[in-house]
Length: 85
Image (cartoon, rainbow, N blue to C red; front, side):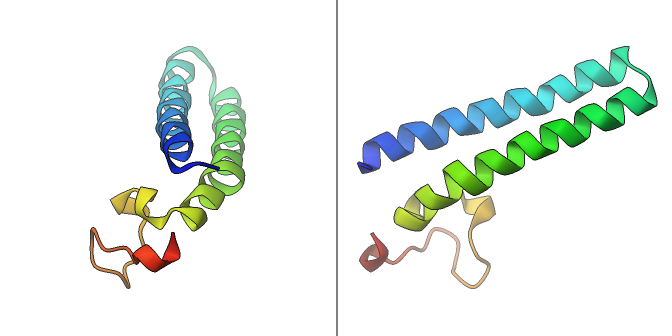
């Protein structure tokens, strides 16, 4: 995959996961505890799949696209090895 395409996908996935997370608050206001629990679990599975199956392969191919908050603590913030590209 081309790097610019990967960058767009990462940005779209970030937007999607944010929107999915926002829906939890809607459900919390309108549903009982059992329904909220099931909904949170379902959203967690969906977000997990996005991270594991879409984002992580991109971050492996282009480590510099990895958001700072997801980077390994063994590397200084903002550091990436261009040899990994």
